[in-house]
Image 1 (spheres, one colour):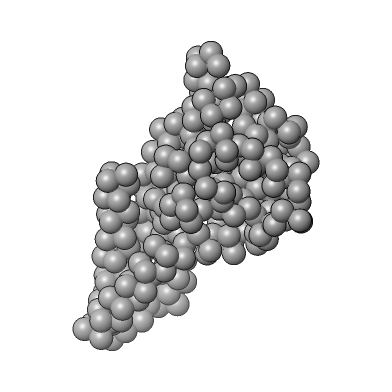
Image 2 (cartoon, rainbow, N blue to C red):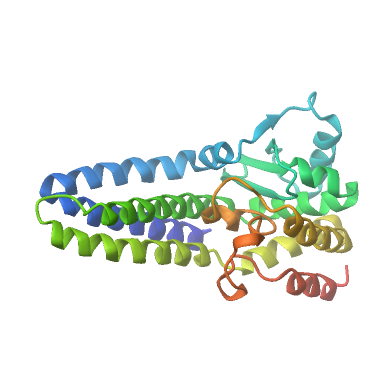
Length: 280
């Protein structure tokens, strides 16, 4: 838990430093504006990043009366995991996937896509839900959500910098600003990628193991991962941002993802291999 808090502090510090650098393009007034904006973003990332992510993916909250079958299934796994009941959301897309978000177990949410509900059997879905609850139980969700939010902000900054460079920069010293914008446009995506990779792949392995031990069965998740790997390639997510891909159980942007070396997820083959080695 302390390690997660330290990583959260580092991520927010990186964002603050980047915004201050951008603000320096406008001199002292820009620095002050950058600091104020950084404080707002940091506050928002900590307290509202889960809501931001859920909004990005158009997730709709589901009550028990709306989908009693799903609610019952999640409640059953929650009981086995010995966790508070999270809020449930459904994402309107045929792409099969799921993620967990929130600040802590008492303020958490699990979102599943329409595609995953149609693709998986009840037991396979239990394996996926147990995996997402594993992230909640292992207290990964805050660091994952903040990292995804910050990576998204930095990616947006890179886009603004590229367009600003194309149209000649801004400020009084256009030559210096132009060079700074070029550097920013190059560095910002790299920083965003580093932030994503800072979300250790070991978290996915640990959540997989937590799923297997919670359900006393690793085959549910193994079967689900096989289907999800194939399903996400056939129906990749068409909205959202790759900066948030680390949140999902399977990378939802397979069609445009970077090579495996720079993937936010371990390979499905490796995950299945480790699950089989548990002999559960």
